[in-house]
Image (tube, rainbow, N blue to C red):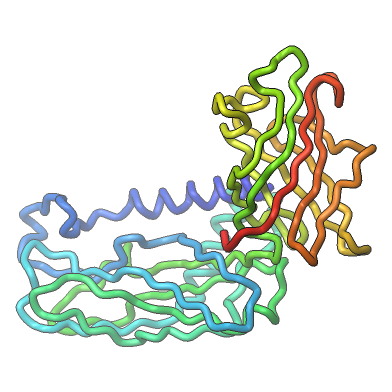
Length: 302
């Protein structure tokens, strides 16, 4: 479902970008009708995202604002930024219309500050950065869909606010506590294939948030020294963690291969004290033919 939602959001974002007709200074041509005019815009307008950690520490993200013009401005330009909840509601409606199974709505993030509520773009330049501070992410719901919608509300110096590029919508997916970079070691068995069977260590993988209690592991093309994936393609594992007991029991499934299953004879688990996953998985004809046993140790942020 998360992939489906991401595809919908990407599609809607693409619509917003394709509909943007203004040109900036990145090697694009200006038509004669735009020559001499100046437009305030977000070059990367529409739907964006910034993943935040569930931390009490303030987190800051930034994005570019631009004066689109064929010639550099000769005087300072001041822009004023504001929150645009109407744009967020409209975007939610577009997402729901694209997939009628979606019934959730984006919510305004409850504790954020636009650090550059007014920003000055100096004469002879076109760009500036807007910084947004996100606070108290440790107190919010992991299941909520939070967003920070920001629009350009005023501009000085005769600059026109580009109507179709004046708003940016930052969704704020929240990283759960298992997201991060992990070092992997273990064994793999492919009966009859000595090249891919054997012991491996030191591989690095990223586990990304998939939900409040699950992470996604893209196994990719890094199983053996031959750089060949165990199933000949991309493998995406979803690891779900239960905190009912310690160590935490885990289940493993593969979004790309329904034959992949956790080995019930192995204590698949996560040890919160050492931030380590232990898991044994097999596929195909079973544990004596296609199988792997892995240890993933946390090594740093995602």
